[in-house]
Image 1 (cartoon, one colour):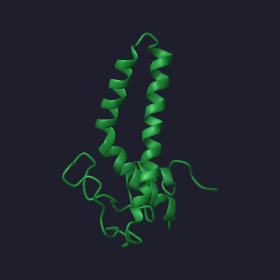
Image 2: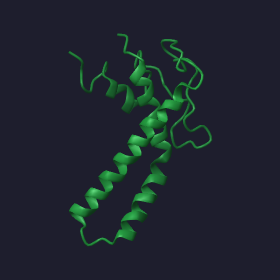
Image 3: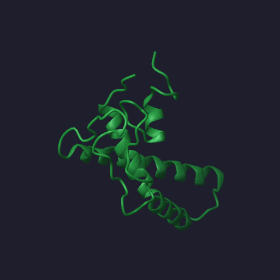
Image 4: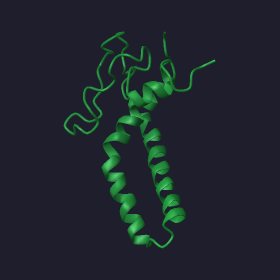
Amino acid sequence: MAKLIGKGSKLYSIFRMKCPSCQEGEFFTSHPYNLKNAGNIHEHCPKCGLKYEMEPGFYQGAMYASYGLGVALFVTLWVSFNLFFPSLSTGVQVAIVAVSSLVLTPYMYALSKIIWANLFIKFEA
């Protein structure tokens, strides 16, 4: 049975942004908010040597994951506003969603790439 959160799970690799195969090596060359290198990944895992880009354009599919993350953020914020702050005007809600989306863009970009990689690369103990 697969673990849900610990080492060996997809979530471990995703949230720690580690190699999907060994879950020890760093996946990205820098922090997501280092805007000069945002989203840049290592060519190979520093620990196990796995080649991260399996084919040219492999991470273009991460756009689907990014879209899903953006929709999840929007829905979460919109529902939260309407449940907890029902008197908040629509304009303020839209502004908060827009600012949140802008601020979280580098993190969601990185998250979408690591999610996409985890869909296709299996953990090797």
